[in-house]
Amino acid sequence: MGCYDLRAWTECEQDVNKNQELAEYLRKWRLSDARRVAASDWASVWKVRREDGSLAALKLPKGRDKADEGGADDAYACFGPETIAQCLESDAGGWLIEWIDGPSLGEKARGGELENADAELIALCGRMHSGRFEPNRVWRTLEAQSEPLQRFEAAKTGSADGEAAVRQAQKLRTHLLDTAPAPRLLHGDYHHDNVALSSRGWLAFDPKGIMGDLAYEPANSFRNPLGCDDAWRDPARVERLADGYADALGCDRRRILQWSAVHAALSMVWAADDGAVDAFNDLPVLSLLLDAAE
Image 1 (tube, helix red, strand yellow):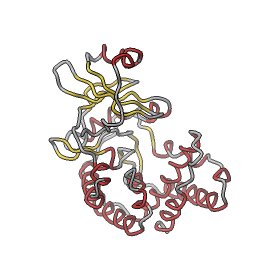
Image 2 (cartoon, rainbow, N blue to C red):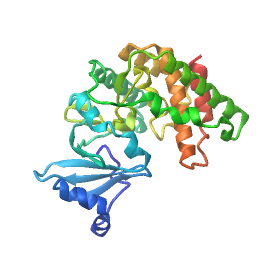
Image 3 (cartoon, one colour):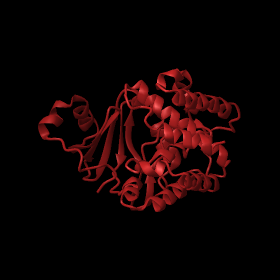
Image 4 (cartoon, helix red, strand yellow):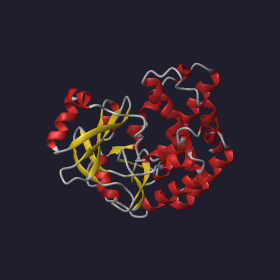
């Protein structure tokens, strides 16, 4: 099994031929044997074969994801091959990434090894950030990425508890930005299903490439992996993750927890902005993270 779910998506030759954007990339980068292995409202991913016979993943983002991933190609280069999959080709509309056979840490967790998957995720995060990278361009900032939370009208959550939780997260965001240390290059979307096993060990992929507080990097992993929802609501796991990341990154554990709460609220706002009717169903998780961050 690869790092994308090959069971979920197949694409027949007729459908491939109808996809003009895909066809252009196949010609441009001399690719063949395209098979769609993942798709969402934000991107499609294709398993392809390169001219030399090797496999690769072609990612074609769309909508907000295309704008959000403007720093991805440089982020791949900055983190290096020991900790992240390598970008083989890129332009303004797509990325060709080395193929990783997997499994992902998400699959490992869903297979009953959650605690071990969490430990591997934390260890890789520490290795990714063991060096410092000098900014070589103007990067998207964490402040800009999280701005939708600040603009959101908290009353739209539909409940008094939801409104209070979002307002608390908004205040936390302001505090964290006002007290932020020197910005670091971040993966920006670091979680179990964006890490997979390769011949070089566990590697991250799909970076956003943003500059911000290093304590934000673990935030998305508190509400992951998908399919392990009960773990998101486990206070003991929240504390274990916070302790592990604090040790691995040398960050203040309270700031890690605070950013995890802010990111949980931000994710709900993103979902609401995209029209999801169940965007705030995870309010108990947000409340748990807010309490832990006190």
